[in-house]
Amino acid sequence: MAVPAYCPPYGQGPADHADDQCGTCTAAGNGTVDAASIKFVYESSQRFHFPVADALPLIRVLFSLHLEQRMTKNIETRVLIVGAGPVGLTLAIDLAQRGICVLVAETRHRGEPPSVKCNHVSARTMEIFRRLGISKAMREAGLPADHANDVSYRTTFTGQELSRIHIPARATRYSDKSGPDGWWPTPEPPHRINQIYLEPVLFAHAEATPGLTVLNRIRIDGFSQDDDGVSAKGIDIDTGEEVRISSLYMIGCDGGRSAVRKAIGAKLSGTDVVGRVQSTYFRAPDLLSRAECAPAWATFSLNPRRSGNVYAIDGRETFLLHNYLRSDEPDFESVDRDWAIRTILGVSDDFEYEILSKEDWIGRRLVADRFRDRRVFICGDASHLWIPMAGYGMNAGIADAMNLSWQLAAHLNGWGGEGVLAAYEAERQPITEQVSKLAMDHALALQKEREGVPAGIEEPGPAGEAARKLAGQALYDLNVKQYCCGGLNFGYFYDASPLIAYDGESAPAYAMDAFTPSTVPGCRIPHLWLADGRSLYDAMGPEYTLLRFDRAVDVGPLERAAALRGVPLAVLDVEAEDVPSAYRNALVLSRPDQHVAWRGDCLPDDSLALVDRLRGCFFGETAL
Ligand SMILES: Cc1cc2nc3c(=O)[nH]c(=O)nc-3n(C[C@H](O)[C@H](O)[C@H](O)COP(=O)(O)OP(=O)(O)OC[C@H]3O[C@@H](n4cnc5c(N)ncnc54)[C@H](O)[C@@H]3O)c2cc1C
Image 1 (tube, rainbow, N blue to C red):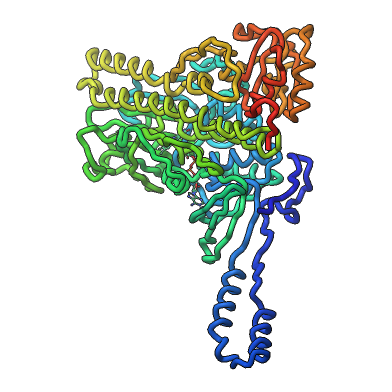
Image 2: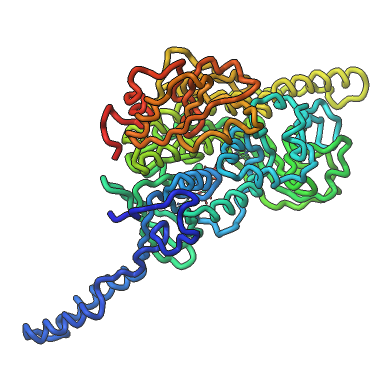
């Protein structure tokens, strides 16, 4: 299969990729059966003395073949991504920045908003966006800059406040350390923004990235793969035209109903139903003026009649309300939507609101048993689905994307062997399995709170006061873990990777809330601020970076070994006033995804063997 022979690294290619082969149509209508063939049939009839009429069926077949071929566009790209959701776009941007030409096929129209789902971008995802050059634009989008990011627990949206988790507004997010996550060692605190504002930022960045093409209104309808590549069939939804897309690798980022997942034979397993939720996106310009308390980003209503959660979407008049059905309410029709909305809001029948969209959905805990079949991978919701507690569906998918993208790019750029491709499933599958359990456990704990509301919680007087105080504290203690989930952000580690050189020490335990920064191989590189004011992450190279804390240590053999094998390696001499205690060694080697690959006080005896491990090759094996 022909593939573009050369794809320039990010920033070094021509400004306009339209005339190279990266993700553009390379052979539209390359029919071989044309007028010349028909002429050939006519001449043959003359030469071999058979009537032209006898050849008519053959001419018809040739002509229809010709038409079919003329209607099929053929596109070649190095990587095809199915789905331009947040995971597909992030993956595409990172691959393209690593010099890999990538094409994204998406059924939605250009600019068509996604469903109003995700509201929380984790600190870890913002760190990833920072590396991709998107975090500033992302931080500026969403709620008004001074809109509270707090989580408020109340009897109803317009009722009495039970407790409040304070999270600074985005205007002061970098400087205001007053919230429970203010101490986190990160250059990028979390960001509260709905997916309808997030995706356009990602899309604009994707469109501006050289080597990346998004094809909207193309549905991938099937594919086949062999030793040389993947051939996918796309349909132009508006014209019915067929598009053939040939690639070296394909990644299904096609969401929870992923057809790619089914096609590679991956099976979801876990818990089918954790909870049922009626979600309603609505406009209500009068709602904020009816509330007694200061606005919040998330407002949770707890009362004996109906509990639910309301997210501020534009900070003025649009809201997303989740009505969590009780365990004795087995179907969506068993609860009157309008009644539930009014009860959660605490408003009477004369209150007016306009439904913009609604969705009834089942919260699950499902993880695919495989994330790959040879040249085809799955990523994001295509590979795992769970009830979005702690706001960690998309964020986990983006972590998948960051993991897969550098590994795939290493292979395609010629320095990563076949082993580098095996790491994705080995690293991400166990982690997503663990996140899914943490999210489910939290959903069940919250369900218990909702179903055990103290009867007097809305009563005036000391008994009501006491009930509210108790419930408020319990809700705070339970939920600060999910809304300030430091463990999910920074605590995940890869403990069974073929690419990591372990040294026998175990990583700190993985939990939703707590985490301990660590340089145990497999953990996220602990963040620090350099003496010159830069974030460590901004100073690191795009691929492997060796952090050196003692300039006297000779790192030449590792540099030479990396150069010999073509592995990009930067050496960074760390100058910092506050070095976290996790940095106990003179040398810590960071992978391209900012996880520790190896550490030590001096280089290992065999630097070449270490480099071969990093690139997923057996000793001396060539990568491609
Ligand atoms: C109520 C709710 C709240 C949530 N809140 C959060 C939160 O706060 N934080 C968080 O991290 N996560 C949250 N999530 C989860 C989050 O929305 C998803 O995890 C996220 O959208 C997954 O992104 P994705 O790119 O994997 O898939 P999707 O967003 O589903 O994108 C898949 C894309 O693929 C396209 N596609 C599908 N099939 C094809 C095909 N055959 N050909 C071409 N294109 C195709 C689709 O059009 C779509 O654009 C929430 C989910 C829900 C339901």
